[in-house]
Image (cartoon, one colour):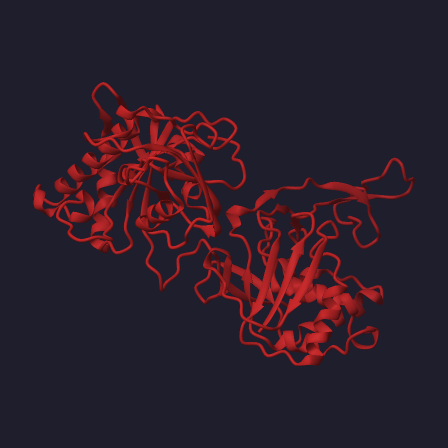
Length: 490
């Protein structure tokens, strides 16, 4: 096993400009993430050189990495990193960068006889977790190669651009069990393409350095490159079933205190649409939608969520949309018919007499312009260690002194969360900006009155949403919002 961990000392990473395809992997400056294995390899090459330029190593450690399979990368999911675009600037140009084709001189007023050229730096990414680990699980590292890797790692001062200072550490003993919330794994069906080391990559770097040292033009994009596809933390796992969530947006925002009116009306409308599309037969509506007829414990059925605007600077607690959550074991035919029922719903008005009325569209429907953050899947699904309730959580049992840690753990288990929280706190008021407070008559559907309140959770590892806890979770009460970076719009 070999693990090389990169700690970004400023909490930010900047790779390079868009033309650095040899190490960045793309031809558009979208903000490289995660840093490619080829970039790490190049940093280790630069740490002690190659051939007769080596001072503390013999190069065998580079040959080991060249011949190894692409590593697993343990890094944040892309939504957990904040991309900050850097603006281009003009600098004094050398002969290689001077524009001789357009006829424009680009004269620099302060330097007589000199010309300027536009330099466009790459995108900087601010990281939720400042560490990235490259993991070769089955790689055996001899003692000499281990020493060489440690020596080179100690000499690496930055990864990517010089304003991304890092500290590297090397580990070859023990085992690392990667959690999927931070795992980028090589996969033929992966959506992310990254450059990786390959047998001959070191020689290609040497040839490029020799060409540049001899005064000949050389661009990084001219380097031969080999790629590997990676499946990121947000990509679906083929071997793991995940719940199906359909997202809706509202034409007219609804006050947050109408949460039960919204979710009950949504349930009624979808059941009606499902029945109509099934030929009008009430028996055609499956149990997973209405929840009746289940026996035993541990079963899950449909959840109906209202999506409020919370957790950002302009949050107002208004419900901007809704979502229908179906458990992972829902039959594909049922999922398809539910989506058809939602399409049927978009041709009608959703509402409840005397409480609210609004037109509905699918969240990704651009006819109404860009969707608000509140109805985007990433707003509620982004993996996070901290979660706070947008709507109050209805306690599952009467607790005179408030819920205990064991009770909160049970709430999580009942909601399908495998991790136990390491800390929690409860209060009558929200922990998140514009979180919705409810009166008892607004929080309960039946005659039974259980205690309720707002909840904040902390997990040891990031947990993926959407999450709803407590007795009213099927109707959107106890909906939790991830606490990552503060949002900027509604």
